[in-house]
Image 1 (cartoon, one colour):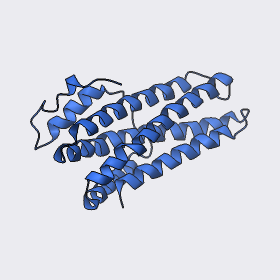
Image 2 (image 1 turned 135 degrees about the vertical axis):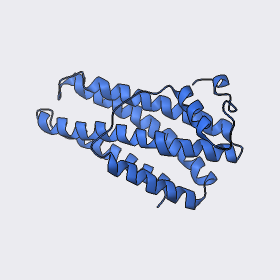
Image 3 (image 1 turned 90 degrees about the horizontal axis):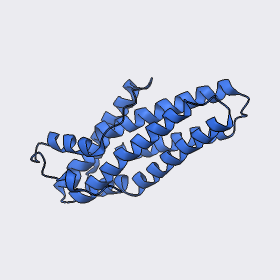
Image 4 (image 1 turned 60 degrees about the vertical axis):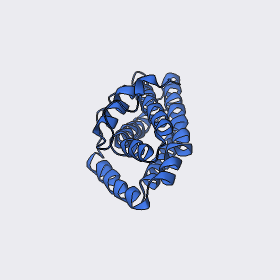
Length: 189
């Protein structure tokens, strides 16, 4: 078992659920609502699992292998993306299920999520497979699977400040002095 495979499995499920929504008649608002609620909950649980398990490990392995600038930038971008996805999910809730506005908001959430997944698959997951030993990826997979199992019913959606997130995670790393990554000097995309 490998955490990168579990994250990819989650991405496939997210894509599947968005595709299901696109194929349901807009008059079936009960079905649309049920699937959207499942997807919205799943998106947040997945984001929080990454924020608590994957991205701290990516920062740690990046620092240990002298790739801190790359993984730091990937992490900042990912946390920013998670906030955009949360905001897009919140926007869906402002519209009546099945309306044009609701479908437009779902499409915007799909776009924000798809952009994030593509970037994460191309960068963060690839880097992690290259930098982290399989035994470490397995250990994290067990933790990730347990987190998702414990939180299957959902977690609270809370935006995070990307730079504060990285500073806090680097502070927790035992081999790195607080502030040594100079997060404040990074340029935002």
